[in-house]
Length: 293
Image (cartoon, rainbow, N blue to C red; front, side, top):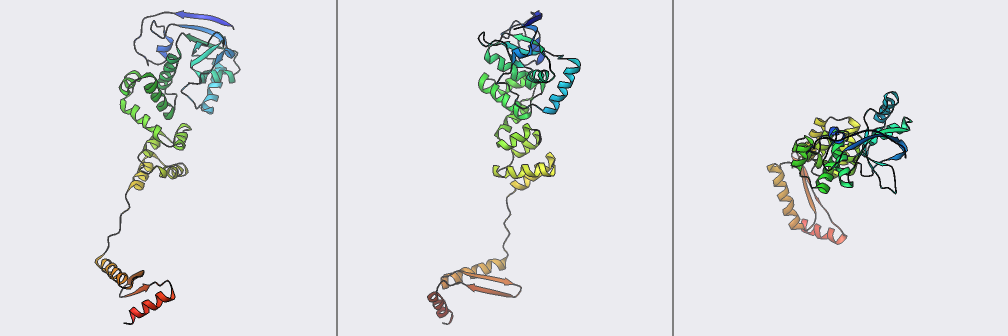
């Protein structure tokens, strides 16, 4: 393993998590420990399967590759040492830069080595990615959920640490209730967070697939989607019967009671018809006898 130590600093304690990249790179005496800036072989760096970011935009990644080829890696990635048996470093934050550096053909990459535990590494990765707004809305929501469930954060604490309103966090968490197809389209940025939030208002979730097709096919705006959701949710209005229709229905019921068979009575203008059904020859003769009495 080749390591070229560049900088090692120590500094004052910072009490707040979630200060973004500065809090990760700037020296600290707290539980996250100080950082050592080194240049190491790119093959010594490994991704973290717990990384909150799951989707990498290929077009943006290509842009970053071009930038790295021209200017190099301006901002080091954050890593921690793997076990002595495994060797190398595990990425805490900066997997996109690492991927782009590989594509750019770099053999070495600047990294800042942090001495942190498994849980601390995941916590830093989630907070840094969320603060940088590199994650799509679904990945952000999954990150919030993991911080709440695995690290016992409350929504209020997350709001303070991440500099966001509690409403923002609540609304993002609600997106996780959407069907998988809708979440996949948000991740792929085929529909926006606004579209997704509108879909949360659909009473019958079986209608969501149809709505998604219309949104994409018609290129519907968020406002158009909200209007369509209201229309779908609106109760079907029953037609009000007129006095004449009620009278015909009453006559129909009386005839059914008398002839003991299915009967329909209809009227158009001054004319109309009465239809009696029979189900056998004997039934026909029975009706004929009643009608001729």
